[in-house]
Image (cartoon, rainbow, N blue to C red):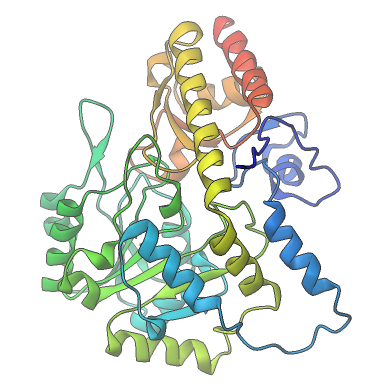
Length: 393
């Protein structure tokens, strides 16, 4: 009998030290906001993950450990069954976080006078991490189509890419717009980057959360050229809501890139996970498919709820239906508010904490990113507060 999971039950996160609530006062200057910003969900981490961790904690000794024998097979089997990509065991390595991984690649493969290309509007650490490491960041902005979705601007990419560009950071699926890049686009990007000697970091942390019949395509799988230049980052953490358990991994098919990158990781002992990371990963990938399916169905209904509410009560806000993940890109330009007034509307009038679009770079102006990975009652309250605030404009 199939177990039915309950995603409707609100969970009180107070006392857990969660970033979503604890950062309200230092970041927004007030703690009375409904937080729908940082990209973790309000759903309980699945019981099979918790139970696997609990079982390990029954042992009274937490000394040095080796990688569990089923760690790599679990990751490989999951990627094969969900994305049709055959990953070899030697291509894999643990990394202590995807943003950290971007920083590692920047330091290993670029010099201080070299550049990193990103495609805004995009997840802001793509810019902050290279800049924080003293590298220049080059913008290749996405082009917004008439239907509200985005496409890559290859003409602009040709213009901005010069001999100093060494790395392009790809968001696949894209955050904040929730796009699943199609195979033709990824193959064209691979051809360009191969011919211009660019390494592609493909952040695929949202890959297991494709929605509404869409499909994720791993960048490295689209061609031999893509495999030759790619460093893919993934993790079960978004899908199974366990971001606090750092359990990320890298996949590098090319031997030359792999030896250089993994050699550096090993020399600095950055390829060694904590005792809990592989346990949680194996538990999620071996036991999580039914939970994942039900969670995604609930998220899809939440997206529809947002669409219906905006259409009926907040017509100045147009949600872009995500093709992946639990993040909804809200086009608020129909409200006719400049940036500071838009922030005032959401924060001081509606008492909501979302990520404002400008933090994602050029093209994000007039947008807000809404996290719908929460119970329907919380989402209903948030949209009610926003609708009331908009009526007061």
